[in-house]
Image (cartoon, rainbow over all chains, first blue to last red; front, side):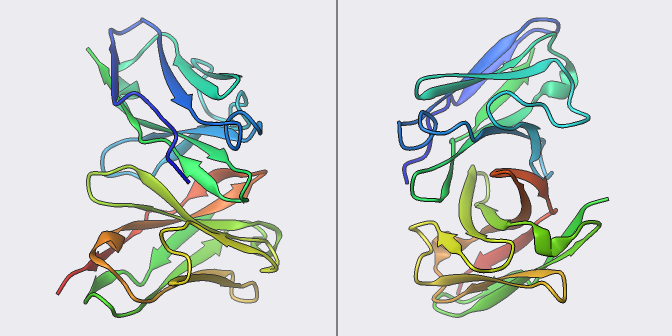
Length: 110
Length: 117
């Protein structure tokens, strides 16, 4: 159950787009379309932003989008806003019927 | 709306036990799988365990297997996590979450467990 690999930090200016990668293996990210992304502001509970690789839950801005290629999933945030500054985590279902998270990425809006 | 309220956290000595509870409301609890996820201070999220909607299947992270037990009482709309043989590295905020098609769709606010002598 090794954690998925995410960059520790990314940054961008307001209005720009950024992409956060999430790399796993064929036993998790590459093997299933059950990759999700979570946003967490300091002191708050995580919030689901993307489910099933590409789906946006009701109420989530369409500035957030997800994709996957092979063993790597990605979260793209377009039109960056100050409120997007937060930690982001990816997660995947695994072949062991367990779940695994990425180490998290701190997004800074410059 | 969906509400998940965790309780039972606190300070406990290494080697002792603690039971967490998660009271669910705003949805048909008996229809959904439920997870526990934890977050050590200043660290990332770690998945802990899942229990099927009817309690028939349970899966655990290797780090807690054999020490933690997830359970549920559908008549009380409550999820539990029995934690035995606690270690310092179990110190974390513990969240209960509701599964929706293998995604952790709804989260409680968490309860802090501190393992320290």
